[in-house]
Image (cartoon, rainbow, N blue to C red; front, side):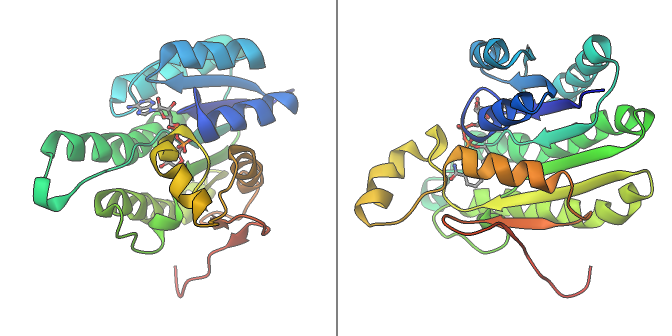
Amino acid sequence: MSTVALITGAASGIGAAVARRLSAGGARCVLVDLDGEGAERVAKETGGVALAGDVSTEEANREAVELAERRFGRLDVVHLNAGVTGGVDLDAFDAARYRTAVGVNMDGVVFGVVAALPLLRRSGGGAIVVTSSLAGLVGYDGDPIYTMTKHAVVGLVRALAVPLAADGVRVSAVCPGFTDTPLVAGARETFLNAGFPLLTAEDVAAAVESAFYADPGTLLIVQPGRQPVPYRYAGV
Ligand code: NAD
């Protein structure tokens, strides 16, 4: 029986690379994105099914899980990956942009976990991987609001690791450094001119796949030219 995967933010960058990687391994994927046409393109390419939806709403997350159940009858792995930058200059604070960052990066993960858990349990267990960031482990002064949201989901993963493991659901996070995707397109040249190496979306997708099998609570640091390594912290 092939794996059934649900991936958010799957129209582009890391999420699309995960869809390609998992489908190449035989998985059947439900691909959710605000960009419905982009999700549809990746679905055609990977043999998956697409859903246009805003992950900052409970409804989109519920619909995505219902689609997995209707089309494939089960759910094994969930990649909660959709994300946006905060881009917040505190001296020119944009409350709408702040709310969007919190909505996508934090609410989107909470609503995704809540929606997916019942079907994961009914499917006999599985895994949830959240895309956090290195900015979820250290303060990134280039984007404080993004840093806050990425720390928040690390906290959720830590807190849920033990209770969800009791249901056979492993929850973990990947924490990539800068990755060459449309999200950082504006800063790409600056990085490259400074000789700053970028990850590829495929590098991160490989780490996401390994995180599905990692111990609950693992926070997998992903950096260019190195094997992904679990972040070590004191206590739980
Ligand atoms: P990306 O912009 O290529 O992809 C993000 C996708 O999320 C897009 O397809 C976008 O349409 C979708 N999305 C945005 N808001 C949404 C919403 N409300 N509902 C549904 N989908 C929505 O960027 P990426 O780099 O692939 O980002 C994926 C994840 O990786 C994000 O969580 C990001 O924070 C994280 N991340 C990125 C980097 C990096 O340097 N690119 C580093 C660390 C972590």
